[in-house]
Length: 232
Length: 402
Ligand SMILES: Nc1ncnc2c1ncn2[C@@H]1O[C@H](COP(=O)(O)OP(=O)(O)OP(=O)(O)O)[C@@H](O)[C@H]1O
Ligand SMILES: [Mg+2]
Image 1 (cartoon, rainbow over the protein chains, first blue to last red):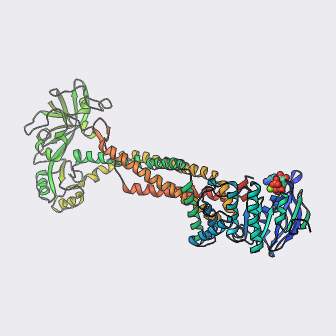
Image 2: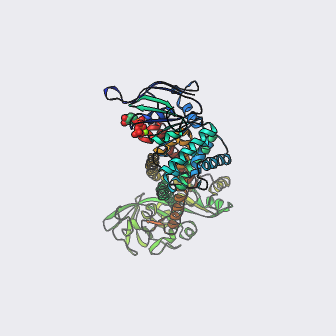
Image 3: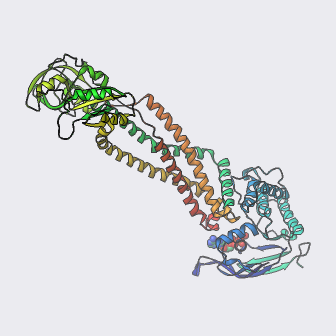
């Protein structure tokens, strides 16, 4: 469903340009749970942002279901972000002045659902990430793990085609990380949710189908995993 | 668009609900001061106008004034005019006056004045002259060779340092009056009047008969017939009725007469008024813009996030338009409360000019409405522009600053 061809992203220009992505190509099929790994600075976040249409590639081609999204006008990109993409930010990126429920249902409202319906969707999503009863708290009244889960609820509430998550467990302890990964696994197994997740924890690969590894902006390995997290 | 409005309202309301209350109070306070600034000075100026027009009615013109037609110096047969006027329904009182030019001298001091010849007993119903005698007494029916002198020319009243004066004229002093026709006569000062108004305090009053004699007038001549009416606001109807009653002289309302004078006086006031409004508006607009801009800079990341998750820039801009409208509405309400309490205060404790001129501010509903609309318009622009410019920034830049 996602096809990336020779994707490049340079920061700056000329001699001093940082080649964060230097020609990356791969495909992601519907229903896959993919991990993107690599050393710090290898270009993982850069790639994910481009895939989620938060940033533009310098060169290369990017299509989703045959649609060349790299050249869409901003209004359509915005609509696409709203309706098809869920993005879980490394630093949660919640709106501090909105309650957990509001953070989630603002998107449903944007999609044109009634307030009541939006609220119901939000509660369901929050329940799915284990935050039942905490829907009226604002981010400041939640722990890091809970905030991360609100961010996930926000991403999954609209049932996106693809969900992107940038180190969703970076600020969480093992226990909380497992909870988050279980949510992802459940979505993937039981709802066929396509997930692309950046991580640098090796044990996370137990949960995924496939691991793409980057090094200095190029793809160095792309492997399918078996159930135990070992390479096939 | 409906979705944009709903989402904009949700963002704005959560921002108000959970935002910093101290900031909110501060913003509202500043906005209320901006509003006050827009409406306060005009109210004071309005108060001065009322005071000024009050003077015009209380002294030279009454409610309606009749003056000679064309080049005539005098109304001929003022008594017949008076008879007609007094018969008009709605007229409370009327009298005739003779205004002439003269110079007064006392101990080598000379000042030019207008001497008004009047019928003292009738003036009680017509003007404030009988009531503003600060020293001595007002003229009586039998007053001959007696004169009332304005405090400014007497050299005792407020303002006498600005104008030529006679230097300490007191009740009982003798002054020489040289009339415009050359006749010179000595008068004893019967009283000093102080109306704290140049048109009054720079003049002198004598009995009507004095002027008649000096100028050798016959058959009840007058330079003006001053009319007071029962009900304020009916001046124009009475004016018409007087004309219909067969008065062929020129009939003016006090407003007609003072218009030119007030226009002159108010022109400079008006200019100050407009300038102060203009400055207030600029300062107000800049303040609103700064407040909201800072507010938005603090929320840049939030705006980036909202965009990143698919909220349309339009709803974001709308949310700030709602927010600033909300702030400004509160500011206007607070400003109105502040303004009205100040108005109440100044009604009870008027600003005093010239020691006795009490200025009570006037509340002009049109001005209030105008200011409210101006503030609201400004706030929407001031709130929307910065939000719009931030919402146009790239998501990466808004969230991560690069
Ligand atoms: N806005 C930018 N301007 C200049 N260089 C940038 C910018 N953003 C990222 N880079 C550089 O691009 C390279 C890739 O960055 P990226 O954030 O994609 O790395 P990453 O793989 O996500 O690293 P980490 O694991 O530390 O998050 C790095 O060398 C980084 O310094
Ligand atoms: Mg990263």
